[in-house]
Length: 338
Image (cartoon, rainbow, N blue to C red):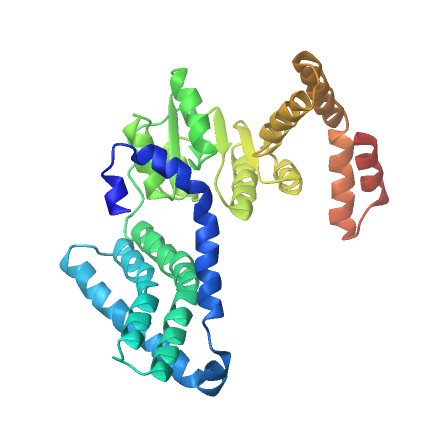
């Protein structure tokens, strides 16, 4: 790989070898599995597990120390540590070479081979632990260490939540020179918006004091795009109750969440995936051979058909919520839509 990387034909070589990468990886892991002596594993499983954990812990301690020495701290240091804590696949080569040269006996080589294989098998669990245990703590700690920003100006439009959905709303308003104030609890998202000169502030938009400072009493629009279903519904309900003159636009995760937002008082509700899914469905019709204009007509007919039954579906959903049971009328309405 190192030799080929220095070749002027490296791009063509990579393109030619790429189709075989999956096959070679599969072959490698098949040979690893085929080389496992299950009799040794059954007889000495306690020793194998203990040694594998010891290898991971000792290597992780060394890697963590190296990370600190070279300035890798926080989540980057843990990612470096957990990503390399397992025994490498080159261990199989070393064990085979050592056994062939009578450095270690065959029985010990088989035992150590099991240790290497088990440590590699545990690697995905280390990454899962990083994603679910370590990374969220660093994000929460980073957000908790910082107090809510002091909002220095107000605007007629407030956007609560500037994730992958709210960012697009902010960019569209900003492109049309409409003044906005953006609020979010994710510091990374706030910093991204500030790079493109959008006024954004760190803080929980569901807190009454922060909303008042942002000018909710004089705002014309509030866009609710926070990434929390319950908080979004609670925010819509609170604003509609105390500031009925504010027009509420809300992002829904799905149809049921959209009905909850509508019941809470949202004036306009848009599902985060609905329009993109309909757009992709139109492309699917075109790819299937339908003329693009006809595909567009069929797409709009589908949307209009759903809109014409929107109130009926909402009433049927309320019947389900009130009765805590499935309403036959709800199923009938979906059959009509189809």
